[in-house]
Image: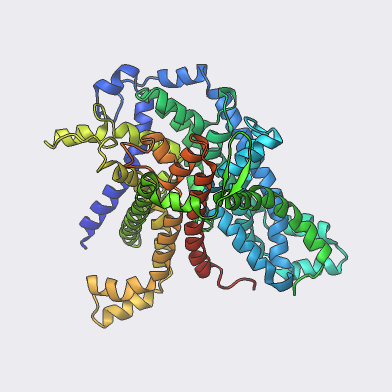
Length: 270
Length: 289
C-alpha cells in the first residue's frame, strides 16, 4: 500500500469513528432553532449554552449526585471484598483445586446476560425492602462489579513477588499486617485501575436501574437518558448535553486507561 | 510456596462467597426451579410441570423470532467488528506521524456509555432530520426508515454496536500484531513473500489466537443485547428487533409469566455458558505460577 493511500485510510477511519462524538458536542452547543434548520452543519453558527442551562436548572445536579454515589459505593464494596478473595486465590493452596472452579464460576457470572437473574433479583430486593432504593442498586451492581474486580485484581496480585511477603512473614508480620503494609501498597496502581473500570461499569449501567428504580428523584444518568429519549424524541440539544456530561469523565481518562484497557476488557468488562 | 491455613482462607473468601451466593447462585437456582414449574403470580403457588415451559417456548413464534434475531445480530456484529478491527489494526501497525494522537480517538466510541451511543445514533437515524438521511438525499439516494423498516432495523442496531465496539477488537488484534517478532516478517520478505501472500500465510496464522479471542468476547457481549434495542426500537417494528433479553424482560416484567421467562433465561444461560467455557479454555491455561 502506498504511503499516501495508507494515510488516507487511517485518517478517514479516525474521522468516521469520531464523527458521532463531534456531532454530539456540536449539537449540544447549538441553539434549539439551529439544530433542525441547519441539518448537517457540524460547526454551530452560534455557540449556545441553552441546552446545558435547561439541564442545570432541571434534574442534572441530582442525577450526577445519584450516579456518582451509586457507582462509587458499588466500587468501594466490590474492591474491598474482591481484594481479599483475589489474594486468597493467588496465595493459598485450595483443597481439590477448588480455586479454579471458583474462578470459573465467577467468570460465568461476569459473562452471563444480566437479564437471566433479573426476575429472582427483583423478588429478592422486594423481600429485603430494597426496591427503589440506592442501597439496593449498589447491592445489585455487585453482580457486575464483584466478578470483574476479582478477575482484574488477580492479575495484579500475581505480579507481586512472593519473596517480599515471605520476608515479611519471617519478620513476624501476620496476615492482616502483610495485606495492609506489603500487598496493598504494591498493587495500589492495579487497585486504582480496577476501581476506575468498576466505576465506569456502575456509571453506565442501565438494566438494573431500569428495573429497580421507580421514582425520578433516584434516577441515574442512563435511566434519565432512556426516559428522555422515549418521552421527548427530538429534544436533541438537551439529550446531547446530558450525553456530554455522561461521557466527559471517560473521555478525560481515555489516555490513562489505554494502558489497562486490554487487561480490563479481556476480563469481559461491560 | 503457597500458604496453607484453612481458617485464613475461609475468612478471606467468605465475603465474596456470601455476595455471589446471594446475588448469583440463589437467583440462578430460583430460575432453574421456576423454569420447570408454573407459578401463580398472586398466590405464589408453585406447581411442577416438567418440560412444559420449554415445549411451549419452542413453539412460541415470539421466542423463535427473538432467538433468530439474537443469533443473527451476534454473528453479524461480532464478525463485522473483528474484520474492521483487523483492518484498523493492520493500518495502525505501521509507523505514521500522528499515531499517538489517532489511537486514543479511535477508542473513544467504546469509552462512552451504550445509552449515549444509542441516543446519538437514534438521532442520526431520524427520518426527517437525521444526518444519515440528509447525506443519502444529498447524494441522490432515497431516504430510509432506518429503525422502522423490518428488514433494516436489526442491522441498523448492529451498525451502532459495530461503531461502539470495533475499537475493542482493534485493540486485541493490534496487541497480537505487535507481539509478532520483527525478524519473522523480514525472513518472509527474503523468501519472497509479499503483500497478500505474506498476510495470508504468515501474519494471519500468527494472530489467530487474538482473532478468536476478539470474536468470542464480542459474541458473548453481543448476545446480551438489551439496552440498544430497548431505547431505539423497543423490539419493533413487529418482532424485527426482539432479542432474547427483551423476551425475558417482557415475559418477566410485563406479562408476569414466570415459567416462560425462567425457561428462556435458562436457554440464554446455557448458550452464554457454552461460549464462556470455550473462552475460559483459552484464557485459563497457565493458572498459578
